[in-house]
Image 1: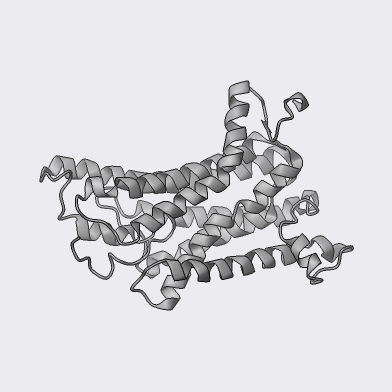
Image 2: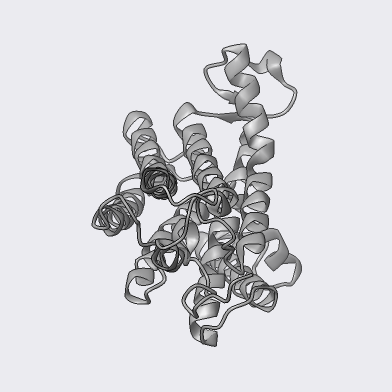
Length: 303
């Protein structure tokens, strides 16, 4: 394998983690062993398009959640833990531009990518603010208790009262888990960056992986999921799929060139999709049946 420059062997951040370094280095490469400029252009456009599509899907997730809140006038069924983590991840992602970790496209204008990131982060912050100021009274905090049971068993939370199902403590537990898992992930990943930069990337990646778990737990309790909330999960899955396809396709565009973390990245995205796979099964089943909502479990008679 050809020796790659330091920037090439680094991490990639989310759908854009270190793909930019790859694009800069491989613009001199070839597609399928040929030197055809047309083939190179199409291959690079394909990779650029996958990353832009993943960003558009992220924007779509916030639009879906905003539509759900606006249409129902209620936050019922929506996990505040998930919303905080997703918005935090998108805000954290903005730092990748300043740390020179973000994807740099070869064909599509670069300005679209930071613009999409700013739009996504701003949309998420606005959505979270609206949730707290306008819809918090309709928030089902007793259902959004991922991690609360563990804290209660450790006697870190009372089993009754307002603090027994506090979303603040629940989110704190989730972020503590993210911090620990990020350290474990750091020990698996390879990087020539400093510990701070590498841990930043790992922390972001773990945030993205676990962000929807509290929401999926709520789905299991409600057994019925509105179309807007379902679209939120499905668009997240499409985002993950685009990133996975990017890494699968990369050596087809840049022949004989492999980023060091390509295998780890593909494994990460497969795991992300597996986390969502249970819900995606019920979503597909509901679509086939023509259900207006996604029915979790075997209770078709509940429709």
